[in-house]
Length: 141
Ligand code: HEM
Image 1 (cartoon, rainbow, N blue to C red):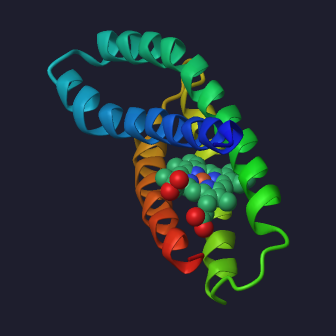
Image 2: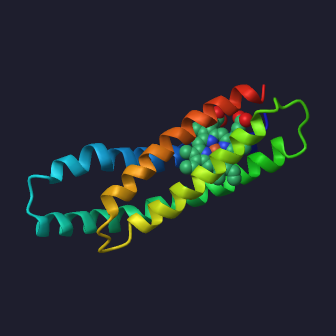
């Protein structure tokens, strides 16, 4: 068995789970729990959580870029027989991934007052990316 595809597949999936799962937990778990706090305390807690979370966001972006680029260049760049819809669906996925990467990084900056709205958008894009990735798998069979 070739180990490299397993390693890169693991890296892609663990990074996707960490990034999208982290955003969903933030929007649907952490934020509702903070509404009972005063605005000042809330800001402090949010900024501390964002600073602690930022290294995970950075490492999952790196993991997705490295594993996704390896997978794309090794398995798809010269592949024949992909269904025609694969290419546009992959293009939309990459555009949404750029949105997720950029805005997740912005949102974890200290003192960001637009964090809630930004992470809500990232949560929507993240879920759509996972849906498109599920679709891609069947378009490439
Ligand atoms: C937020 C960003 C991303 C998420 C959540 C994500 C998620 C996923 C998931 C869940 C899969 C299916 C894994 C499997 O069945 O083994 C997948 C497949 C894939 N991903 Fe990503 N991904 C992201 C970004 C990227 C990027 C930036 C690239 C390229 C540079 C990429 C390239 C690929 C490729 C080529 C596949 C295989 C598609 C196929 O089976 O036809 N992904 N991705």
